[in-house]
Length: 266
Ligand code: ADE
Image 1: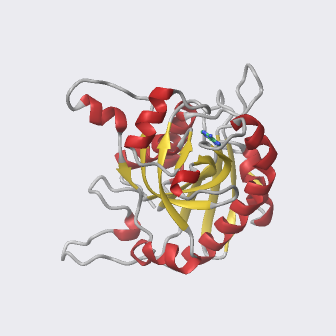
Image 2: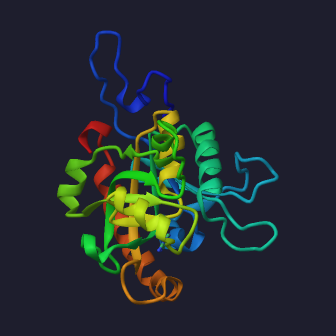
């Protein structure tokens, strides 16, 4: 449930005696940039579109919700751009939906799930699914003391050692920027971030969740090899369906693992 402003979500809230109260995770919000990425999971979990969405009437954001086992599952997609009719990808819509979802749904846990480019030099292959260990930005270059660190905005993801071990998932750092291609400047920053995967939302979701102290997991499926020899957009479109199916399988295992557990069990 709600973040309390004291650095603990209710699911891991410390009581006045200093004892960590263990309560099973109950509400999860998935932030997913493209509805296509979420569709297999929406169908598998039999989630329904909320016709009384808690979001402002002006926005295209879509909430799919339902119960799965003991978990209140919500998938929030930013929906289509009102002018161009394409998915509202990138950091600005991701930040907005994360903020609004925390306010409206008070999750115990946020999961940002989606596709990413992977670096074969760091061991990534097409269809790999990664649990992100930390996220940072690669296109916020501010060469002024301390503002440089703000720009990079590195944040550790919520630690999930038991989940990673049980599901045998790959682990890597994520670098986020608002472009699918990679300019030489971006490449330099991504290398400095030591990233294995590259996306267009993760660090923005982590930034907002960190403000409200909502534990956040990022899970990314690799659609294209950034340091390979194929054009990124071609490889992305070719592998989108297969990676989405792989993500659906991995996320289902993640949810099954989370069910009945407390944050500290992850
Ligand atoms: N999503 C999928 N592939 C990507 C890439 N190469 N860069 C950023 N986001 C992506």
